[in-house]
Length: 431
Image 1 (cartoon, rainbow, N blue to C red):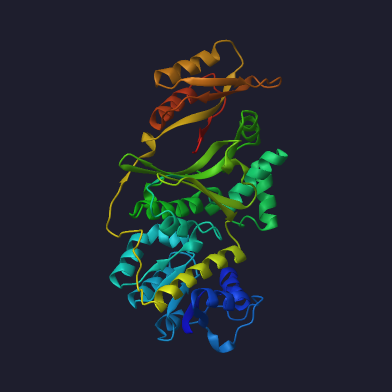
Image 2: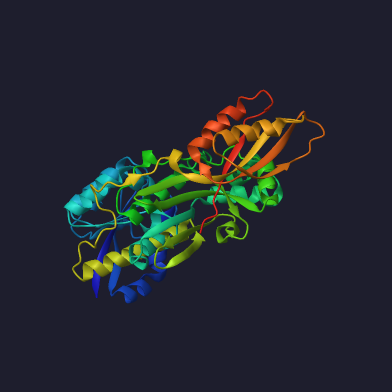
């Protein structure tokens, strides 16, 4: 049986999970792919910390470059993270013609064009199943299972921290800050949670999915991103009363000749499949023009789920190298440009929470502004307040252009009868 010799860069949580999974199920994987996956070298700056797995000392080194350049290493697994040395190491491996397996979503989102070009020029490939959705095989679904389809739309819950926080807020009526502190105590949120709760992590994953779906490198800087920071318990309760659940969504659509990619909190109808995805779980709904709607669900992060995805990629590498395939047909074509739709050009329905002075005629003034911008009201819910001069008025609108909403909200919030900045959430009916 052929051997595929692995050079592992990064022996942290996921790296140790990969080693553990290979020790546990390596024989099973080898039988299934017809080649033995063998750990040749492991590089990490800290060689003393206990990872819960044992490896021979001679496999370990602090010199990542020596692992990449080792002629006995057939494939490099990059699990360092970040966009610094990880980028340099990946480029070095690709320039040597070695396939790279990575879970590094930030690196692919920020430098994908450069990396995919290096892979193409050196007749090798980047494998990135673990970069989106943890153990959910969404990359393979896009590259293989749905190859017969134009992808009309994707809707993704791609960050377990945000989903956990929003789920707890709704279930227990707790404020955002309290739930976030509990999530940090439970290990579901980082001590510095900004990457997650401000939407950047989800945006990185959205860029990767959109690039694979539409064949060109989607620029990270073109993605409008809003996080969940500041979403109030009251709005979670109001939206639930109206039949919706708040989710942080990655929304990816093909609209004519343009591609629309955005990340923000959105209201999803209670009866939609994505609304039932709770806690730290992830899910991606994909709509193809031939297959229709499909859903992919599972744990989106963690040692076990992510290492499963890494080994899935290693199995593909083993199959390709065993059969003399240096490079598969790539879904992302470097140098190809696509047309991106700006946020102002999207159309959506909206949930608005307007804090109005409790006097007759106030709602009419808001309705007049909305109407002047071509926005019609679908329903209104006024919540009684016995202690405040202002009352929350909940408005659901019909679909209209984003730029019209932005202009209308500026006018509404400048009214002397509005007591606080209007809360605005988009509604996504999905497919």
